[in-house]
Image (cartoon, rainbow, N blue to C red; front, top):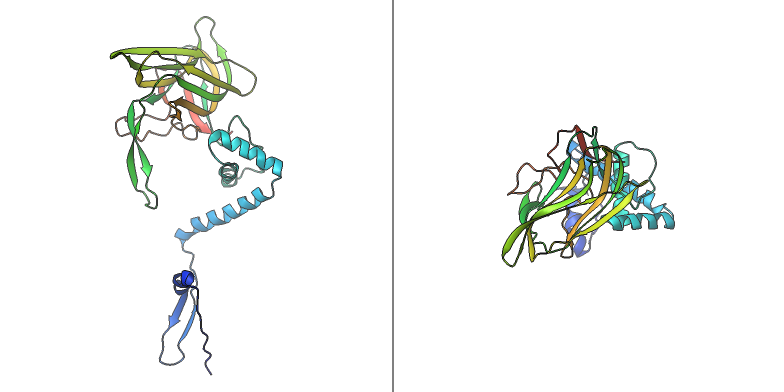
Length: 292
């Protein structure tokens, strides 16, 4: 004898319910059953990500209150919540088979920029461009591989404040070396255009340091400018993170967390430039974003 059962799902769940069943329509003995999910190859990545996130969430939940607070403090520095930073960092460690969890640093998080200059017999310049306007490609929400150019206006007013955390081990050539931060560009005052240029030395200290400086330009506004990290006639290594180029209350640094310093800029009016571009150098220089 057949058995009839009435199913009355809630209205909000009705669509999901109908998608999850299959109906065998026959003249006699009609029936219905749940659908079996077939995990094809294209589904594996999604399944893996879901499993990985569950494992990371469990690790987070098992942290002490003190350790969570440390992650929260480190996240504030790079513009993330503590949990977001923990997920980002732990995902990388799992994907690269790195054992254990790290103790988060307030000086640098996740990836950092590293520049290695092997000799001190020439000039070296690492530059980030800041024109008065440019276009960045922004991913469209909900549309795969679809992007829209968004105009960024950077009509700067003085001061331009540069700040970042850095670690330096360098040998200088006495009397010729320049190791510092340079800002130069074009500004206007009383309808008269003029160039400006200022360099501030980076101090060598033990461990990670914090640099901040207000580049003050006597002007009405700045047309365009560049930020340079100079290492003329020096040898060694420079690491940096959490880069800020602030004016008018906003941070205009490109790749401020230094996760992709070699990435090609997605400008429509500036071509073949990277987030940090090597300029005027004959040195053997390596620049990269690394997981420290």
